Length: 268
Length: 268
DNA sequence: GCGAAGGGTG
DNA sequence: CACCCTTCGC
Image (cartoon, rainbow over the protein chains, first blue to last red):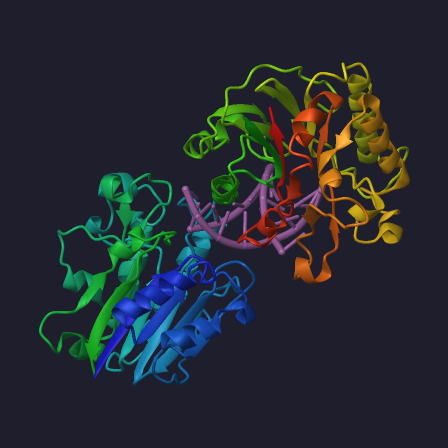
């Protein structure tokens, strides 16, 4: 069976309901992980997701800010609820679908100043990575697990439009890149989208709203990720190469999110 | 030549550009007076008005609030600029089109408490009426003049959904009704829309956004007016009865203003 | 630039 | 309810 897993920072699920429906109609994800739903649980457009064919939901929501959800075509079983956000924000949600554990995160952006002592938001971001890394280090690598979401770090030099300029900017500073690398190493994760689109190809999943024409300037960052455990590698590579991509055309739609969806196919 | 003069409180001309275009396409006003354009001069959608066939503009604008404009199919000449708003708001704009002077006003709503001493907004509203009345009293009645706009007073008992209840509510209190009557008397104005739709017919031009179904409850007010000087009466009645109306169907359109357009035809 | 938030107005 | 404002975050 093919299992298509997608992750998308929608920047308000209520304002983006139409675009989500279009993406689901065009690409038929089996599991859709959302970040920045920006609504309370009761405000989530459940009916729209039912009509899209994704009736099974796990939602972690709060008023107005953050918020994550997993919508699934197939029934959802419980998966461990991680306690990695010290501020109590709605930034983590989990599910087990077709035997695969999915952990969906919206990691804090981290503010402007890349200094833990000066900037509590940056400290929170690194603390989030540390807690998450510690949890993953204790896992069984053979269990099928996907860690997905807006991790708010562009981990490689080809994941940013300018490695030199971005090295001083939050999302691509050395300390964040190292935190990402430690998370990846903790369980031997595969960065699946990067495997499918190898370096030195540039690959982005986010472009600022501030650019007039995001295609022309193309000052993007790859912030949205699908990391898979060793136990899920076989399912990802059963057809040879990894089938994973960024749906950057979605960034051109009417009233888009600033993030594009990212998807990966598994055979399970 | 037929001259169709319309007035409409659009409640943001930028958000209502489509509805204005539709109204102009369906009713072909020669002169369209707008209130509550809610934008600065540079933000006014000039191009859209050119495309509607109303390229001649007079705009009195300020940031975000109030703001009035006159858009015309025919060239505009200068008309007296009245200094009747003591707060310096963008509430007055004038034009002379085809020999007819048009004075377009957005008179202050006046707040909640109908007491000049307690409520400075109510005092401002009455002061505005007094200054305007004084200016009009000094005019030549034989000159063709139209005073139009959102005057924020429902002057007659059939201009409100409930005369008894509204007599204690700002817009229909006795002191406002008297202020309106004095303005009307100052130059011998004709309330043209009321002439076309005589009492005791109820006639409204505004319905609150708060009502679920404005047709069902029909708790409207007639706040938008076309007053004409004795010198313009002949042009209004040349075909017998006055051709003036409220376009209440517009209140049912998608994303409507809370005010409906009002129009009057002249033969000049 | 584009989302939220709360506050003010009609 | 539905516009404006400002502040905030990304």
